[in-house]
Image (cartoon, rainbow, N blue to C red; front, side):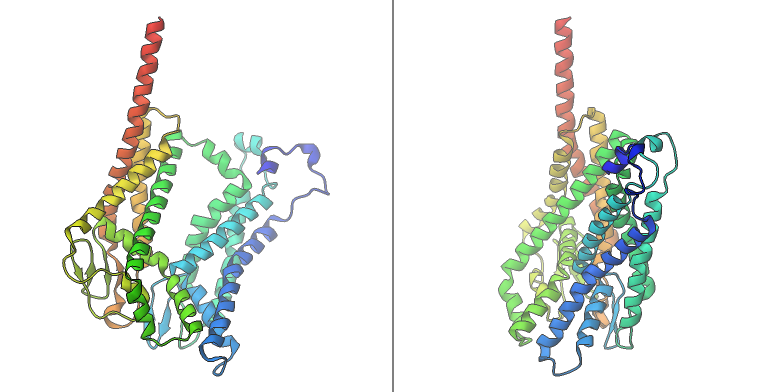
Length: 417
């Protein structure tokens, strides 16, 4: 970023020539994919050895399972005993997103010296540095994904290459592209041209969404901690060895973000399903036979929940109000722009949570387990007004303070006159 903003012509020597943009971005995409992949391959080999001390199969079988887990985190889906599994372990997705952001930011910093400087960009000169870096970053990442899917494919797995590429495109657009733009310094230039209200609204949306995700995760962790004995009983029924128990815990942890999004959908009111003809919501809990998975221990008891459970539905708007207040209280905006930024940011956050909730479900097995996940449309209908109204209330407090301060300044000026 520094090289973009302050790069004198005298410094452009052959010795300080920037590294090739295409090579750096492509290598960044490859490394972003390989980082989590190598870790999962190692975990797969360790898991293969732990399960039967290497008596059956070969290390490549464990590596294949690690590769399939990496692909599943990119939406590939799997075929297990003839049943299609499409639910995505968002824990693996989150690790891949983190890797993509870190490498994307480094790529952006490495290519910041390419293209026109800040003054020339401000004068309207076209700059294709970031688009080229994004395209080549995606190419490097996609090549790794296709190669891994091809090598891991088989009659017992059958990962979907088109789904992997679709997820890679989405992750590149939503994660790598902003990271490259921020690292290269272009994002600072572009956002400076945006209206202050839009920037404030974006900050509110990010604050509301991230805070609500944290609250949802805490609610799930509390529910799981309360039912930890039941979870231990479920695990004990499988009679695992200590090593297998640790491996099984890691597998369940990969679906922790899914459970947090389920909890957020529960707090909003619509809830979620754990199999066909089931519902888990603050107003009713209807369940059928459940798989031996420790995470299901966090589910509430079947029947009509206690009256105080409905009070949990105040958490989404309250969370939005607090997040909006903290995000807007130090921004130099007029009271009407504060209210607009708060309301708009809250609405966007509600839509963003509904999109994330739509990614958290899918088919988890044959038969009735083909339907697991939040009721996305209802989550959208409830989430948008909950976050929007909550953020508007928080912004309203800030707007009131701004209006009173402006009125006090006006009274002071008139008294001096």
